[in-house]
Image (cartoon, rainbow, N blue to C red):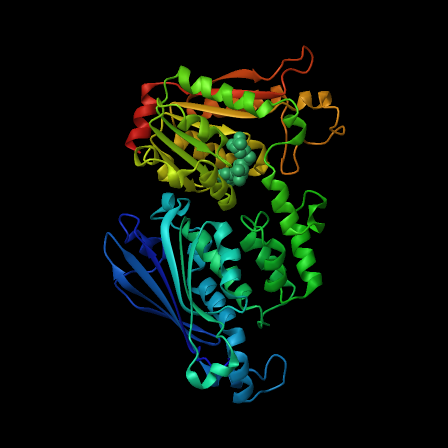
Length: 489
Ligand code: SAH
């Protein structure tokens, strides 16, 4: 199996964002030139397969210098080596080479540096990465497990082995295409970390500073990844002490590090806190949101963090909503929503009214613009507090609808739930729960910063001391100026 020739590796990155040639700025590579880089193990060349305003494809070709490598292998381990040894090793290290090349050739892009197109750095763009040949010992399932939770559509074709090798079983080489709407810097770091993870064989760089690299490059997306532990383990070449350290540092908060990813995923899947179920709070909440939407005569509504689509179902049942979009970061939730809403079997006219999108509240996404109202129901408390700044911008500055309806638990009420131990949050995946005061302080601050006004409504039976179990903020865009600005953008 290891005889597959991997001297050359080709990665292409394509965008259809208009104008597509902006890719050249983001990558810091001029489409008109071929650029070459000397690396310790060979050379990397960057050129463009296509560069026009509609489509732009940049290619990174890696040329591994087999002979030079064998020579260099004497250091630092002082072992020397034979060509045969290297030939046997080569596929194992192939993917590390590609990662190293990525980080050298596209370092600025990976770090999100781009003076000429600063606004595009933070924007999720339609991107496709193609790896002409990549070793993936975990098969297609692993590819999907790693990349789909990050929002990519994965296409993988396994390479056929030549007949003479057919008794060796299946080849572990794939041609892979990853498509998604992501920031370019994220695509590059995902590739940087996950290509060696696919390989799952020793790669030559593992040392303590790899933990730092993994944490630095994975900081924004790895802690919430369902295959987090597997990624850390494989990236750190099964050195369990390093992997444990990495995982422990990724989740600073609490004791969940000892849980398997599946257990965590299952917990997150139980969307509705059990303590709330008893009082039918969620139904009351959804009805309250619906009432606000009707009162402002919203026609086009986006449900951000729509989960399994409970609110979408109510919207769909009411003809006054003509355009309905549900967005969530969880593929699994969207699949469940798709099924529960019976989207497959709806008459065509109804199907046209509703769309489900995979996305994230952390990134600007043009598909979420132009709505009368946005709902964010029981989502904010699932976001890490330091990321609220990004969330605020996405919601108030970019989505920027006329009306925002946002709900979150009122933590003061927790003492009234008899089964909830003191000081505990209502749900495992909640990062925080706010008192009425805390919620109103955040909401008023955000309103002031972005030109909205906020009013607050209780949800559920109000207690004279601790208030209602849940709280809702209704945000209204202040004036026409704000609206016009949003339209110009
Ligand atoms: N609004 C739904 C689901 C609430 S549970 C309801 O009321 O039933 C919280 C939801 O937020 C989950 O579906 C979760 O996947 C989603 N979510 C968490 N972080 C997100 C993010 N960064 N972007 C989009 N959705 C997110």
